[in-house]
Length: 330
Image 1 (tube, rainbow, N blue to C red):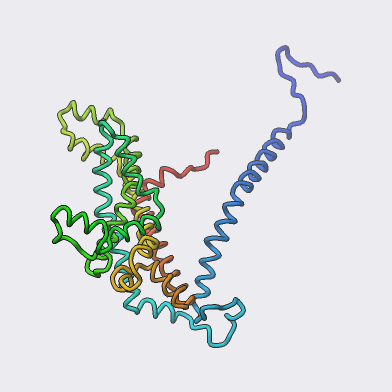
Image 2: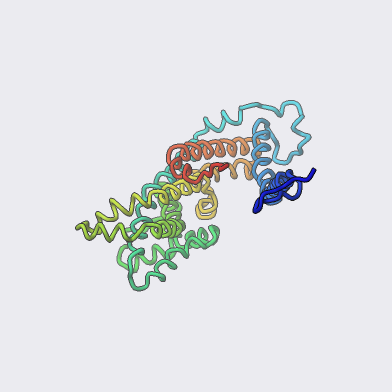
């Protein structure tokens, strides 16, 4: 029996399940693309982050000789449990290293942050030679830490360039043994670290200032607000996300500071006044021939960094990250 259709009505052609099949094909292709791009990064993360952390945690439970093999872990008497952790946390040298590390962390936040914000606000204004100033400020950051440390080590010698300059300016009474005097060695290291990394902080603040609408400042100035009031009530609140990101990077970098201290300060002085958790870990784990003890210090440093990062993310970065989370849309 023939089927009649009304004029202008559409006639369905082909089977119905075809769109669903195409949807399944697209979903499979999307998963394959994600797998293709994520796998290399995941392999590197597992091989260079997770595996070393797990091995360090295992080694920290043993009393290991300077040269050992994996099968030696099964030797009787090697397993000592948490003794390495107890020893580290009760050793005055490691306690001093923790205090020195947190001193550098706190001073970095209290000193480098305000300086970076102030310089960035000045360089954000229209002025002649602004590009040259930005370049000169950023030059120390691009130098390798070893090169910068050796250069400052030569400049701060008793007969080095800094004391010679003070003598030439008639300020010979300010001459110091900058890297050998335990009373000022840590402050000298902090000055070098500030010189090295302040450029990155300034450029980060300048990048954040580019996102501050000029219309808000112009409207405030029309209403009679001074330049300082504009910066305090408009610029700084809008710059807060950038400041929080910089503070997070500064905290993690300060906890792991190693190369600048290791290269600049002599071992004898470093053990007395400028030892950090990272330098103490390398000194004990590699040069003192105690890999198990050094691994325990590495695990402690990892746990401290992880806890601080998680707490900071939970408290300070929560509102910044909440806006970056993309929720699924049906």
